[in-house]
Amino acid sequence: MKRILLTVACLAAGFGPSACKIVKTDSVEGKAPAADASGDDARIQNLLTETWEPKLLPTIRDKAVPVADLRAAIAGGLDAAGKAHGKAGSGAGAAWNFAVKGQGKVIEAKLDSRARTMGIDTDNDGAADVTLQLGPVVKGSALRDYSPFYDFTNFRDQIEFAKLGRALNDKATAGLTIEGDPTGKTASFTGVFAIRSATEAWLVTPISVEVAP
Amino acid sequence: MNFKRRILVSAMALAMAGALPSLAAAADTIAIITPSHDNPFFKAEADGAAAKAKELGYETMVLVHDDDANKQSQLFDSAIAAKVKAIVLDNAGADASVAAVQKAKDAGIPSFLIDREITASGVAVSQIVSNNYQGAQLGAEEFVKLLGEKGEYAELLGKESDTNAGIRSQGYHDVIDQYPDMKMVAQQTANWSQTEAYTVMESMLQANPGIKGVISGNDTMAMGAWAALEAAGRTDVIVVGFDGSNDVRDSIAKGGIKATVLQPAYSQAQMAVEQADKFLKTGSTGLEEKQLMDCILINADNASKLETFALN
Image 1 (cartoon, rainbow over the protein chains, first blue to last red):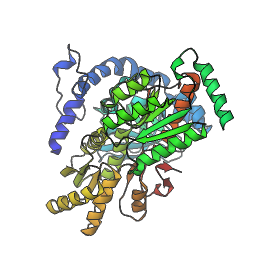
Image 2 (cartoon, each protein chain N blue to C red; image 1 turned 90 degrees about the horizontal axis):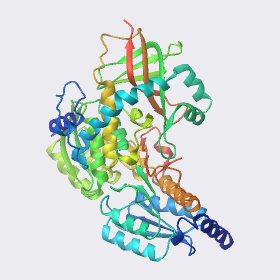
Image 3 (cartoon, each protein chain N blue to C red; image 1 turned 135 degrees about the vertical axis):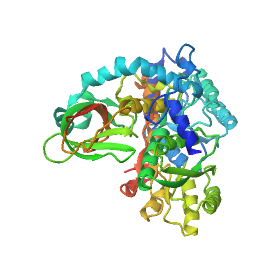
């Protein structure tokens, strides 16, 4: 049962964990995808083609705020920082989504999990203050929610909208390999994260990570 | 009260004189239509909406459709006949409810949806949707973490006709299936029911004594499963629910069920009324129609702050 589900998920994403086969469906090229759930994967694939390289990556690169500047802004009030640099989710108490860039020493690396992470010290105090998500399991939907050009109202339902979030996360961490133990090395990154309070830890979904050799 | 209401009416009449002439005068009533209040979640919705409506000077007409689309349609007829100013609705079916909401719109009555969405946009003014998928992912992430990313587990599914049952299950599996050492050995519906979950859990446990965890589509089923596990002396099994009920909160406090996911029902219903009020006064909510409202993970760290589907 589980194996079937996994295969379906891989087919659905069309890309994703490297263990999965990449399967192209006819509907990606030519015909308009079906409006119901059967067309979701093709439609999302099309949307990724239209937005990932042409819009999403440039938007995040252009708008990413240096870690220290963003930290200072958020210390001055999350809502003010959010209005200046972020994008709000909907609803009371919704998260603010920010784009951030920076570098620092890798303090800890959890690479034996399906949800791999690295903790980075960006302010030289010896403690990790930014956690980078390295996949393949990525939490949250900050890539989707930071982007101004994905509007929930245009999606059939939250399943289709969720599939977009998942596809973006998969795309961001696909092919992300960290060789050896990065602990102690310097990592630079650009990515997005969501927080609901000024004191919440930063869990960044990166669009780029480089560990200096 | 009367005086205040009259001012409101004239303000609205002025504001909408051009745009929505059919909404003139009559009593300022907001209809609040939800599933049965037997489930405390829906009662919290109705209470939240009614409290906010009273605070803003409206009368309320509180109705339940019992998840029956036909009954919902009749309730809409009643609300339209009563010339309510707006309808706050937790609907009885994503497809089946479109016609009812359209009927109200045609009669000049705006609808503000909470909890569940409908499959059409442009019919309701607002759809404030609980992000069940995001919530399910939170629950699944916690579940996987508690199980150490490995082990046999069972899933209790909700009522098949309810879209949220499918959405939650999909959210669970989109996370759990990414862990190759997590093995689902049983998956069965218990139709949101506590007693049914008890029976289902008993048989699942007999067939699969190696189960380490149970992930449930809602809290009432999680309570039933936990009762069966306790009766079988299997309190080592990790149970995670969904909804954020007071029952599960109390179980978490006692070290029973390990986690659940809160849908902020009370504040969501209040937001819908606020948006209705703004729409009636200005002709616009100033917001997108469809708004996803995030759910919040509840575990031993924050369970004590939970009360009637709100975190204090």
